[in-house]
Figure 1 (cartoon, rainbow, N blue to C red):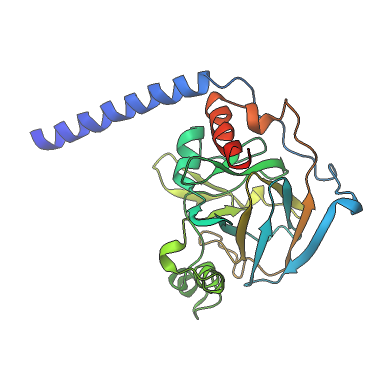
Figure 2 (figure 1 turned 120 degrees about the vertical axis):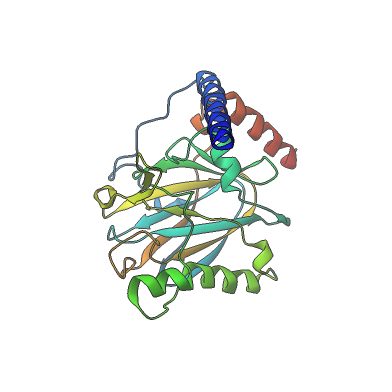
Length: 272
């Protein structure tokens, strides 16, 4: 009994310590997050488009972006979820890191104004526009087991897509990091269980990801493991690679908090 009580006391003390650190980190944030992007806002001018493609349900795409370019991901029908992993082009040992993305920003909620960090503490991509704000960095993408449980036969899934894409880049299983999944409204209930809020899904939702270094990303258009609609990804998603507007000194992603200022300064050293 004493051992159990001691473990509980330690857990409660750790929780209080975490909450104190989070409050201090959030108090240091100098700006508020901007409002979500309106569905009909920020059209991409034709001259800025570099390429555009549709990814069928169950399939994937590999895209290379130069620093300053952006990728718009569009959930055309409001029924798809898009999982993404990525690496720095010049050194694929540097990759996206969901744990640091959450830890450094003190939140699991990715939205306009937030960033995705690499495992070297640099800024991989910034969310410069976002109509959804419902993205998942906790659960991960679909696997053979999750598709089997959802629909019976094993179907195309994100794990297999990532393996296939990585192989074409000369990479393997050990090179595949945990993924970010866009248009995946995952949250936690009061008991700490994952829940899926389908009411957050809308047709036409999009997110613009600005590359802060030269990157190669893989995007998988497969059903999220928690999505009860089977198959969830029944329509293609649209990917538009385009030239992002010039960064201004007031750019919210670069100036949201002291942690982000330092992360961008570290990233910028690659291009001095």
